[in-house]
Length: 166
Image (cartoon, rainbow, N blue to C red):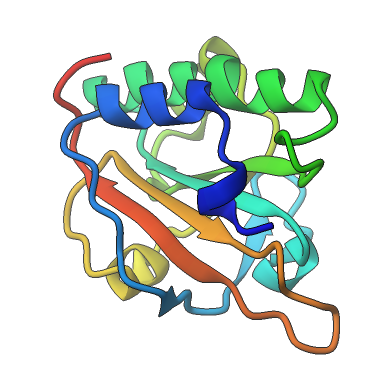
């Protein structure tokens, strides 16, 4: 079952609350390999094959990011983790992507306050740029439910830059 058919209402409400919903016509997501915040461990998009992946681009100084990131962690990540995935049993993962290298102590406070679990660093902004965005917060939902280890194809099913209020 695809992401569109298996999406739970809480995600739709959350996405709608973030502003106008932009469903992107079956664009293939760019592959990435980013360092995990604090540990430097490499994490690749392909590591999430079979999952729905919610990318949350943020920086500690971005007030709308604080609202969006907190809501994503509490409203999406924990909701689906407690239920073993979406109604079709497809795991939903929130991957927070930090674009700010300066002041790591402020980023650490932001990460703790928002309750972020998986944070990757994109200090160059190259992944943000690949999604065609110059602003944050940026929310991108990728459907990897049909991806396989040998064929890790992720489709961009939603993308929205900015926050109009949660």
